Every structure is written in C-alpha cells, then in structure tokens.
Image (cartoon, rainbow, N blue to C red; front, side, top):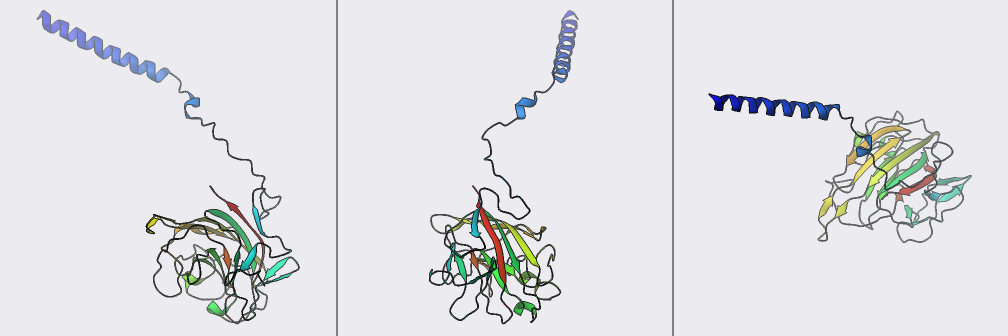
Length: 264
C-alpha cells in the first residue's frame, strides 16, 4: 500500500510541475524582435513624379526624341519607325518591319503606352493590330507576344484581343479605351529558364495591368505565342523586347513613354 501511495504522490507532483511550467510559459510575453528582419536593406528607388513616369532606376527605351535604343528586328540596322511630336509611330512601308531593343533582358517590369488612331477602320484582327513581344527570341521564332489591338466594341477571338498573351491567355477584363485615347500596359515578365540540355526548367510568367486594370495574373505561358499550332518552348537566354509592324491595312499604332526596370 505504501508503494502505491508514494507512486500516486509522485505522479501528482509531476502533474503539478508540468502545469506550473505551462502557466509560466504562457505568462512570458513573446519577443517581437524574434521575427524582425533587418538585412539586406532594399535599394532606394525614387518613384516617378506622376503615374506612369519612370522611377529612378528605369532604363528609358523611348524618350520621345529618337530611336537610339531600337534596331530593325530583321537585320539590326537602325530602326526606321517615325518619331513625331514626342511619339513613336509604326512605319508600315515595305521593307521596314518590326523593331526591337538593342538591349537584352530576362526578368523585368515594363511600362508602355500605345494609341489606336481615331477613326480606325476595319474589324476583328484587322483593326489596329500590333504587339509587344516580351521576349523576341530570334529569327523564325514566334516569341512571346502581348497583343495590341482595338478592342473597344470590336469583336474577335478572346485569346487574341488586346490584353491577351496571344492565343494563350484570355484577359480577366476588357479595359479598352476609345480609339484616339492613350492606353497603357504595365507588365511584370519572368522569363523561362532552361537546363543545359535545352529542356525547360521553369516556364515563363506574365502579369499585365491594362489601363490600371489587372488582366493577366501571373499567367503561366505554355511556350511561344504561335499563330497556328500548339505552343512549345525553345531554349533562349536574355532577349530583346520587340514591337510589331503588323500587316493589317488599318492606320498605324503610336507608342510613347516606354521604360523598363530589370528585376533580380
């Protein structure tokens, strides 16, 4: 009997000790410093003075004065689009074609403004067609196109309207302004990565705001944006950004205020 009484007293004492530790633990105030992170300190970037103005670390791709940052996508000769009153205008003359940046990029934030001409004619894809190629991956490649098109009361296939990653994404909204008004794209582009054998390691992603409206939310691309056929990936490293001189017969598109921020 004495053995059982001693055992009971021991068990009771142990239980009381555990309870006391629990009370003591709960009564200790947590230390907020345990979850504070002080380094590394983010770099200081001064924002633009107005919405859409380039921040202090931006690379200015079009300053309204010249095409010094651009070349012909066909042969890398100086770009021959037109600059008028601070605006870049697509040159649809024979033999001119697309233009692309001299610089190559991987991951970046891009701002670009574009305008469909007032009084535009045509319908569907033949109505103010152009494109912002987020990666121009080489001759013969389709690249990765963010569609530019008059989508204000202009019906077409929805994965080919403005705001679409051509033939892949359907925009979350139609944020089109009337022809003659300036529109904007703000893009976060994450380039695909490839293994040493050329196989895909991670796909490309794009987030797009159209006139301040989210229309592509970290959309995962399935490969190049093809006009015909299913998309596929082909290995590349850094790539230029390209603007399209589309062959539709409608009046040419204008661009302005183009800048990019390289992301780590």
